[in-house]
Length: 370
Image (cartoon, rainbow, N blue to C red; front, side, top):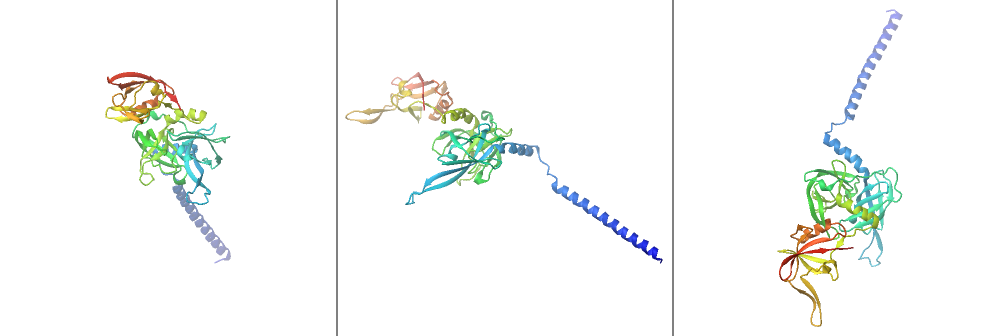
């Protein structure tokens, strides 16, 4: 074979090798690209899933992580040294311009220091603006709030229905901005607050609520705040699928007064009622109080003389409360519920039944405010 022919053959062999290499490389690249595309391709989402994702993205920016420091003394410490104790909970920004945050009172009660962690990781000291023991609601404020702070819009809790889907966001066990979902299990529940008072009209939900969720939002599927998650019913202390939230309408009603004065003034009637088989009965009256001035007759009367001091009972004269503002009542709780919905300082019309003749009489009472 001639030398030139051998050179041409070798060149063709090299070129063929290069061509084959390029083809293999190209195929491998396409396979890698296809593989990467398969990995990056997003799994299909239902309309319901995408709705939940969008609501969480918007609402979670308004949820804050609350850390409190409380100073306590160990009763077994002979030196009685003060020890700091940390607690955590959740809160909701409801006014971004003023830096107003709503949470539960039991989250920040007796706290020496309150710190707020925003969704962007920034931390701020917060001050207590006001609180209401009966509803377990507290209002905090970030002085000089940062720009870009997000807030959550109130919904109408009076329009809620059992079976309606809801979302809860909070910081259970320190796991910040955790989302759980469920339905409204019941409405108008009565639960005893940490202070021992009965909280009425609560929303019950099976959305998982655990320690740390307190003060966080319960949200409808329009992304609106319909409740403040406040309590759970559980033997272990963890979620058992029975959680309770303070309705948003109650929070809206007391919020302006809490911000303006730091407390909520409620009408006081100066009486103690007790349930009987015949209905709610006036047990005792505060001397000079609104009910006493209106002429109501109690079951127990205070007696102080030389021979007798204390209370005596007079069933014959004791008044039963039959109606409040035109609504028939059968229990002390029903009386309290109607009076709670009445306007502050509003004159209340009662129908009482009692006295020796047992007749029904109308009585107007103007409560005092405390």
